[in-house]
Length: 178
Image (tube, rainbow, N blue to C red):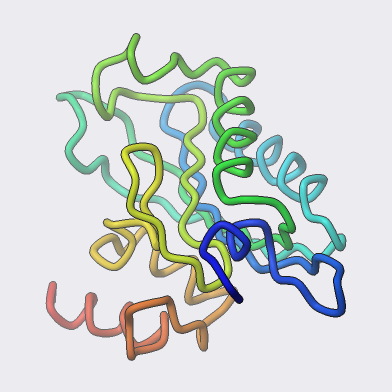
């Protein structure tokens, strides 16, 4: 690859774009949580460029860094194939959140309860550090409710910048908190 801009638009092979795997964390702690999660899974399945779609089971977790009296979360992770830029994928995720009833960031309290939250965790081996997007997601390895579901669907994944697999990172996190 000659440039990061080219890499951001998928991987070129023989002059055509091929999809890369993108991981997305899902969370909901407001309203019909299970229904919102299923709607989000359906949305993500339809986004997958090749039809390849992995999804974890639903995990329950206590709110982290949320306002008092925030409800329990349902969490999951999905993996799709994506052949566009990570910024375009993030825009699609944010548009889905708004359609599902989540207020834009500038109109809500940080970490307030939400009907759905979709976070882009990784997009292939790309690394991004911009005000809009950091890849891999900066808090991914410190959150069991993300690492656990990710290890369920892709335990041997090695994220850019990490020597351990997702399963090894999850096991280490659990060990450090026990």
